[in-house]
Amino acid sequence: MRAMMTSDSARPIWIDSHAHLNLFEVEEVGAVLDRAHDAGVEQVLVPATGPKDFDRTLEIRQQYPGRVFAALGVHPHEASSLSSDVNRRLERALEAEGVVAIGEIGLDYHYMNSPREDQMAAFRRQLDLALERDLPVIIHNRESWEDMELILREREGRLRGVCHSFTENPERVQVVESMGLDVGVSGMVSFKQAGNIREMARAISLERILVETDSPFLAPVPHRGKRNEPAWVSCVGEKLADVLGIDVEEMARISRKNTYRLFGLDS
Image (cartoon, rainbow, N blue to C red):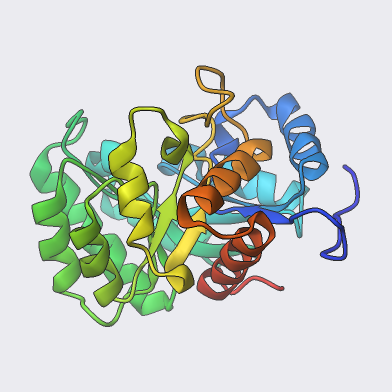
């Protein structure tokens, strides 16, 4: 693995705040991170999606200390798996070095891979665990805003976290921010037909904005249609800078600062 670059580099330095390296083949991860390094990506946060990849997520973190940080949680697709045994396993795993958040958790009513009631129960349970452990959360929301807002408002003012790859309208950005949460912007901001995402991005306060790839999904232009990877978070950031009318270097600095602050990473 190549040495981590320093912030003295002439080019922008990025952090990918959401990349599922646990969904890549084991033998690929080193090369993926090397390509990210060459593209100016200093660190990557890897969220688990459920108990099946807790161990893999922790192994990647341990293999690439300082470059990779981990989040552990049960995704809404896997909500029905959050038994008492799995919850105890999650609680133990959160004590591992380099685990900086609970996630990816939330609600997804598009696929309904778990029943609505199971999703809501798992989301509440993991939000409360985050409060107990004083950890931020990484929140997934798809076609579930009303229940999402209801559950978040039950804990309003107490949670820290990010609504990742956010796709709601500008008014809902204000709701999220009023509850003390950050907003993640993915490669969708670059999609030709995604004017609504660009409108949403303009509503995010600069002190609340994070950039992400959501690898291996949502590859940004000009890589759309390919498997996404952390190296391309710079494409997300560059498009976001254009949308917001700020310098690319400033966008990188802002998103790094916000990611450091939210997840307690070393700057």
